[in-house]
Image (cartoon, rainbow, N blue to C red; front, side, top):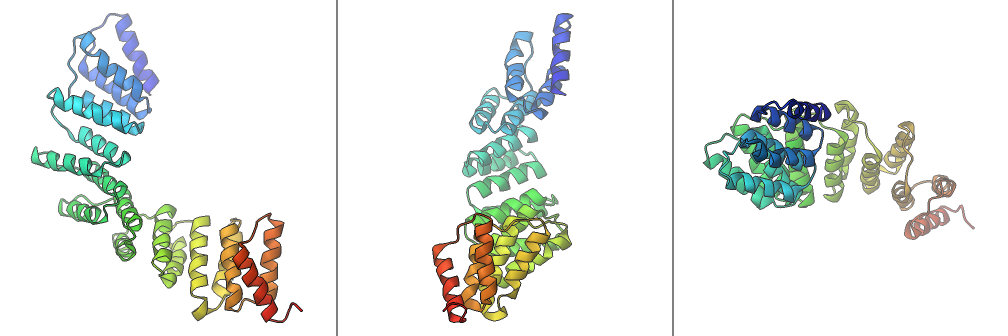
Length: 321
């Protein structure tokens, strides 16, 4: 699409047709969608040569294109230039600038832009608020991200999966395991479409927060929510099963490894090492020996501590003389 847009601009110049602002802004949007931020910026810079003054739409398209290209410092510079030129702020400009703040880790600036938008009488939409939540995620500001979710609901702007996911990640990065579980419960109540990545984040929170039973429960919930468990999901579930071995025995962990193979996932070093830890929790010696042989066949090196524990378990069960 962006190639066609630029071709139309070149053709108009070739025929010496007078270009309009709306024509160039459409071309900028096309370049932005094609991640051609440098071409968008070039179109903006050349507008004065065509006798045209860039408007808010042009500046918004440019800032958005640069932000999509992940040139966050340049996007913020373009935003400052637009405001310095007296350009009227719009939602696209602000959401893109806030997104650039999120990408560059400048969450304070992102919140300031959101507050300035509200002070100017502009109503932030879902894109602006989602960008602000993402900025809080980047700055590990879990409390602010939670407040923004509540603000979105007050403004009748339902948080989407990106907003919920950003708040969830902010809680996990800040080691707020209980709050992360609360966010996850809210996501389920709001019937948010959870993907595998979101489930893996909450599984990480369960394991690090020592909520072993909850980790297994979340893993079992994934297929019901049309989310396919991956290597990370299974490893987190195995860790939870191992930690609960004292109460439930070694069966759950071993069953999870079987499920991994049925789902065409190859257990990795972390999976095997975690399973070998079951040796001290009553795992039969022949299963311990099988795990060690399986690792050798897969060219995986066991953790020396877990290997020693497994051999000791075999010795204790009388299979080594």
